Image (cartoon, rainbow, N blue to C red; front, side):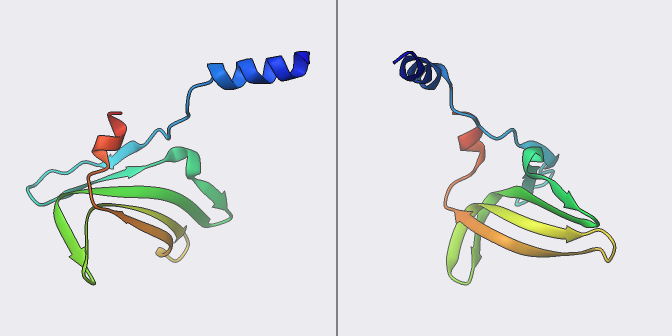
Length: 102
């Protein structure tokens, strides 16, 4: 019974954990975009680095009939041959900056 009480108190007292996105490249021009990276997601295996980053656009983007203002992508980077590949991609209709201010 004490264990259940302790678990309940911990769950009720904990706050949600939000990723600490860091500005990698702020937008400097009209129609530009800002790039953010989540340092907690950076994983290195030898010369390969995997991480999540997001782009927040100032103007609506349209690719293959999909319209978006932000995108979040997981990519793997090859530091030896200076190449990369996308592993996951999600487009968002709104700007991600709104999520940071909540």
